[in-house]
Image 1 (tube, rainbow, N blue to C red):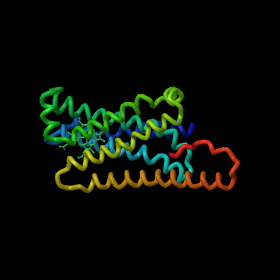
Image 2 (image 1 turned 45 degrees about the vertical axis):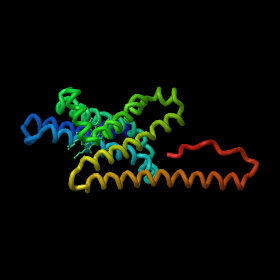
Image 3 (image 1 turned 60 degrees about the vertical axis):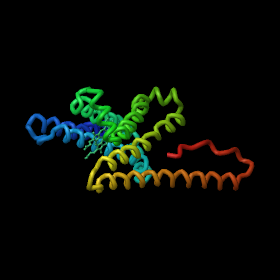
Image 4 (image 1 turned 30 degrees about the vertical axis):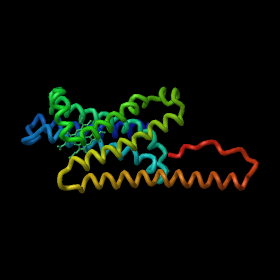
Length: 215
Ligand code: HEM
């Protein structure tokens, strides 16, 4: 029951950036370049949500709030939702599906291809986010596939760093958070491997320990 309310609260909170954009659009609040404002806002929120999904597991382990795992899938789907809005803003509002214009722009601004790659990697994750897919793929394969979210994070930070012309503060901040989250996972993995080896040494005839989820 508590989890259902928390999920509802997170669902409503995750819609706030979109509601703000819609509200501003309806009240002439998007300024002189509305497409730029929408592109930046949806891009920012996609990246913030990528980092949020990645921080669920460390947060769950550190705080021992195990229910947090129950909201990860929903936040992951919001990553895809905002990335799709960001992508649609570009191909629809900015370029009006004009392929020739897009090709010209992509040749001039290669960071767009990097953003597009980050977006493409999200598609298999969104498609396999159901409980049925976890069963079909098997837990381990599913987890391996879902580590692609790190590649999305890296590509997104590269995309952002490449596109800014002067102030690198924000992309660097995102990059630092992403690196810390990645280092945490590597640390957990190394410590689990070390303790697995140590326990095998102390019981030489024991069967190898079953593979554990490194994340
Ligand atoms: C996971 C996928 C993506 C993420 C996380 C992402 C993230 C971002 C971020 C953080 C910004 C800058 C926002 C700001 O300045 O505050 C941005 C800008 C932008 N992104 Fe993306 N992006 C993604 C995919 C894409 C895709 C697929 C396209 C187009 C095909 C795209 C095109 C752009 C453009 C045109 C800008 C604005 C550049 C400018 O200011 O001139 N992005 N993106």
